[in-house]
Length: 428
Image (tube, rainbow, N blue to C red; front, side, top):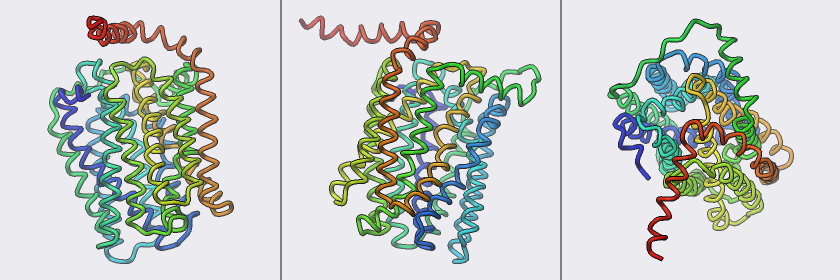
């Protein structure tokens, strides 16, 4: 379950990111609460989410071209330092009591620009830290476990800090947390320099990445489904302050509890993926997880009970986490190394770049139809997407099979399955 942690560089990365991501989730919750406290508007919650992620929709594919050209570790050091400065600016304005919605929107745009380069670089960099490619699926699962483990700690800490000292201290704590990941990146050893490539135009490299993603059905279908979930399903997190106050009649601490409940389910999903021995069968996992996520969203939208909502949210968090991480694993194991940065940039665009469209749409729809109806409609869309993916799964498996055979993944998976069955067979 933790085989990837045997690699020193990945262990450093995991430790630094674990600290930093707690700070990131603290800031996400604090930002949502600050906007809602200042305006009381779900539409503005959606607009702020839109500004924070829209740069990834347009810049991530271009950033992926440069991620394939540049030293990915250096890119990450630069993006983490810039994120630290952005959080410091947010903290300073908030603690001074002079922050406005316009300033929040600008700082969200700045963070979105940083993330457009940071996210594909971080996704592609995972392979550089893992010497044994057999441990790559475990590393991706542990990454997801790390992200969602921070969802348990971060929102809980945010709820307590907001109630005790206000949002500004949350942003300051986030700024300090970036130091951990910068130190971990600097301490790494033996990371191979990027391979020299013949000169080419950005447009040509971008076109090559797009042709691969659009023409190879297994990758294309997985990313389209992820984009659907990002647009229709994930905006429930943007609307969570309204759910906590208007539907469940609570405050900042309840918001933290709700986000934590979702995070617990995500951690359980990460543990499930971490103990899997092979990538074989992840297509079915993606279909089931997406459908489960949609059904849980519908149930959460219909709930008016705090207890029932807390029981449903782990299914929401778990379904989304498994779908997202399983898609990451499938794409990472199928893609050619020379295209990895660009393809993971399209993954970033599908995962995070489409989210601002969903945030904006959710904010607009909720202002007219209500928060619960908006979440319910998103859940129905995810159910339909999951069922459609399941319908096409046999064809997608057939197309992916030659790649898995060529890379020895399918043979290794079959041998692993046989070894797993030997104790049971010998006991008969």
